[in-house]
Image (tube, rainbow, N blue to C red; front, side, top):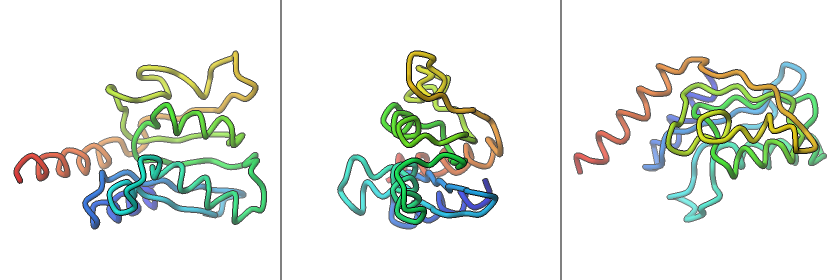
Length: 144
C-alpha cells in the first residue's frame, strides 16, 4: 500500500485526485497507476484502470489471475467491473468511498455471486494515510 500511496502523490503533482494503484503478481510489483484524468483529459484514466492495462501488457495476458491490486480509495463501479473482468484474485484498498464506492459502500461488484468471477476484498489498509491525502487535496482545491 505504501507504493500505491506514492502513486497517489504523483497524481497530486499534476492536480489530479490523489488515488494510486499497484498491481502485484507473485509478490512482485508488475504495474502501477495513478489518476490521470486531468492531464490526459480522459474520464477513464483512473489509477486502477491504468494499472490493470499496464499489468496486462507486462504479463502478456488480459487475465490477471494470481494478481492483487492495491488501491488507495475504494474502486468505483467502472473500476470494480474492470477488476472482475480482468479476473484479479484480490483487491486491497485503503479508504472507503461512501459516495461512489462499488466494493462495499454503494455496491459490491467484486463479490456479486451473479457474476462469473468473484474477487477477495480487504478494506481499510492504511486508510488514515489515504484519507489525509484526499482531505488535503480537496481542502486546497476549495481554497482556490
